[in-house]
Image 1: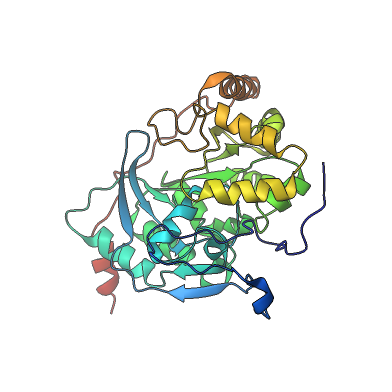
Image 2: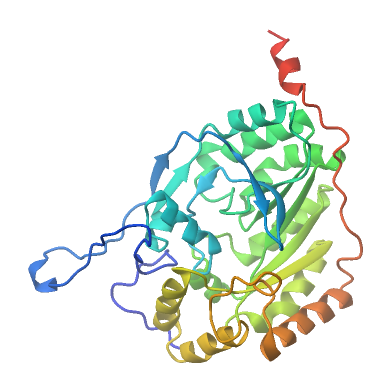
Length: 356
């Protein structure tokens, strides 16, 4: 495996380019490098951009995924090269590439919006996915604590939520999560894509180490918080050989269930991923690319309901079989977690105000 990278490779970032935003008519390009004194793309610091959101709970209505979700952040400094949420950054006027990792949109008023939504008499309690788009425990959360404040609102209203993260920062909020777990109000999935740290540093540069993620599973389980792992996405030729090992390590750490998806590269993610792939793994890039195509009917992008997350064909079938055997061997997915919606208290906000 070649470790050689171009001189302009941005360490600590996943994407190495800014792709064109499909919603913009014009684009900035570098045509005459000899006339430019400064590098066209520069290693910029992360920029926090505040937005005054009007709502925080979104309804997901598709054949594969249904329910509610909420996201305190848009864009993600974790920099996972494969992230499907990259395309959503274009709606904000930015690129799905480097901009997605360097321009983080924060919804500071998210806790207030959540309380307002849960106080609405028309709100029917059902689990909210937290967060289904970008990681609610990405690095900036350590300082802003927006996610923690939202968890406090959920606990106050006794409202159920599911969480998925690849950051061990979630352990900071174990006090709230433990209290929610006592009422069956929370379920956590920790995303673990492999065990090879060298691969992680390229694939997901600013995430918690795999060792720390497994420890996160261990600590959550020890605290009585229902926890599982998502082996997602599985990328043929890069991390697909580690599926069984991840399941084994997760089970030993106390995970009760596991899920998986196969990588798909919709929209701008295809160009971003391909550029990254050939820069990091030039010796096997073509093979990996072709194997991804094999999982999606000859294309890397796949929006077909029912197959887009699991893929099809021989490679996808072998990955599914490997996952299924590992899960059965380590006795995961033996029962389904049922959220408690009966204790929801829509008047919790009013009760708080009555104290003053």
